[in-house]
Amino acid sequence: MEQGWIARAKGEPPAVRRDESNWHESFRLVGDETVEEMLAYYEKVATETEAFIRAVPSLDDTFLLAKTSWNPGTSGCRCAGCASI
Image (cartoon, rainbow, N blue to C red; front, side):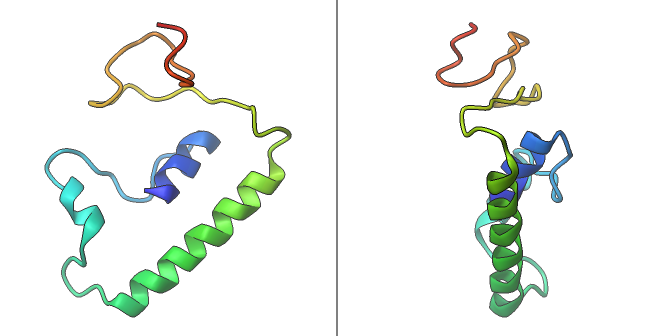
């Protein structure tokens, strides 16, 4: 999930597309995934997240959220409680 939020902030698609049909796979090993592989992936994502956070000019910066099942509006939501609704 962390990778997805950072990707959205960068204006990129998440590495793994999730929707209602496969959301549960975010919380368990799937197929031949191993704990070691997931720990290495989490470390890689954490490193990328830290680099992104250090690179933004201000932690007050916002980004537009894509229209999704959990953000169906077209209000141009910039979060912080969806103040623009």
